[in-house]
Length: 417
Ligand code: SAJ
Figure (cartoon, rainbow, N blue to C red):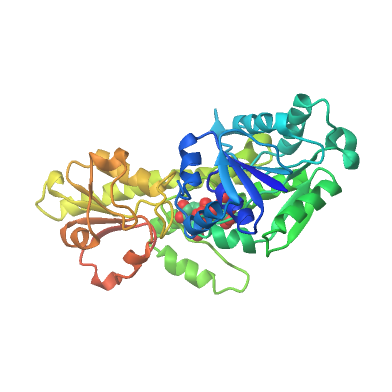
């Protein structure tokens, strides 16, 4: 039995490798020839712990190969991106293209699973695209349990940085268009899954994925809103949260420079786009989190002003050091990172030197390269006048606040203050 995974990115490639490591024949499909060539050499084009080893073994043992053209398979998993178009509307172009690319090679008995984060109704839409392309086959929306093709929505819920563990251990929501579809999808994931398959319909499964990330976004927004209120009231928000969390039914998350990554800052908008009238809290949470970098930037300006007022330095003599660029601690992923956004704003605004410490990279991204300097933690600590803590990497947490001599600090993660 052949499994084909369409889209070999952060979700598709680990999933393809997980099946292959159970000695299933897997063909990964991607439109990017560079990704396909890299994988066929047994290497990877993305950064994720453990993934390199699993892919290398899978390719060398012959169970996994990649291609740019779809092949006939017994099961297809679609894991392509669903970005925004226009004002925070989900863009289903890649899902549509993926569905249309596999339609010609579908055969009676094929199972098609959509994994991409999608608005409610996307699986039914995908089924309609497939049915329109293959009038010779029957689909669940017309033929129900008797359909030639089975279709399900099965969202991923793995945490970047821990994908290879969570892919196997986490429970999985299985949203079949019919009970038969769910049973076949569960059987497929049980090839590598140690967690449980929990069965529902496709619309509930779609909403479940959006709900999980919206839940986290709303809770982070609560913490971020508290951080603004506490700054105004002269209260240490970190101490406040520690104290409140001693209540047996309170569990507040941590404030920060904003919310980054490709999921939590995106998925809630899919709910807002479909239900703008009802999704008031979800929309406001997005706005609170999205406005946090701007607020941090104002804190930086005020702190630099304090520093200038207390010394005879000119602004161009003041050195500002930014600690961390990644979108969360202990990873090297800078995409959609509020820390990056803040460091960029500082470098653009500041007439003096902007230093950057990011232990997880060796070179500044082009956007920052001309304007700021990547330096060691030691150099930043000894040279900078103003410290801006943006990501609570372990290297920064290893320095005790008492050992930090600078008095001008903007600490978005409560590491030194
Ligand atoms: N963050 C805070 N405060 C917190 C926790 C997180 O500010 O207390 C920030 C992080 O710094 C980061 C952002 O939120 O900028 C998101 O980080 P994250 O670790 O919460 O999540 P992601 O984006 O790495 O992965 C999320 C996960 N979803 C949930 O935990 C509900 C993951 O399980 C999903 O699979 C993933 O989105 C996805 O692909 O949808």
